[in-house]
Image 1 (cartoon, rainbow, N blue to C red):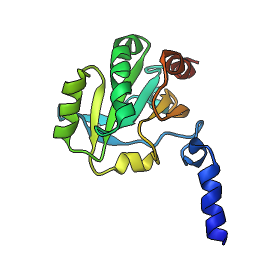
Image 2: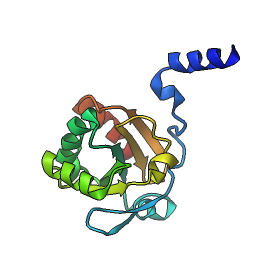
Image 3: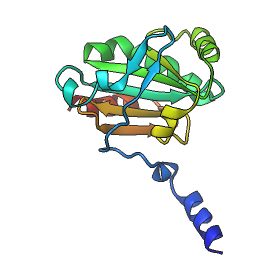
Image 4: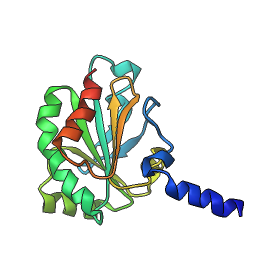
Length: 168
């Protein structure tokens, strides 16, 4: 009976309430290969040593089978140059898919500007406790999570509001 009550309670919570990683927490540091076989390490862009040199990272987890991801990825791609001018890096992480599938998706969607990483083993998405795709983390220069968007970014206004939190 207790188990049924617990499952029912969790099902009734808003989906973002069950996410374990929260805003104001430290973003887990990780390293992965990008699609050009270069090592990407988050601590090269955020954290105490990077303060003042970067404004933050927009870190979005996606998969090729995820329809909302397919809608969101071109929107993020279109903002890369503008955000780079503000010192913000856009990083996309393909979850539990091989590089070939991720590359094919980027080609199909004409997404070419962000840093694209393959998390084929799901290690990084596990560190970030990603439970829904897409999920986008806005990580400040101090290495703290400033905002999280669970599910598709609905529009430019929602994206802009989250980016503003990196610029404060």
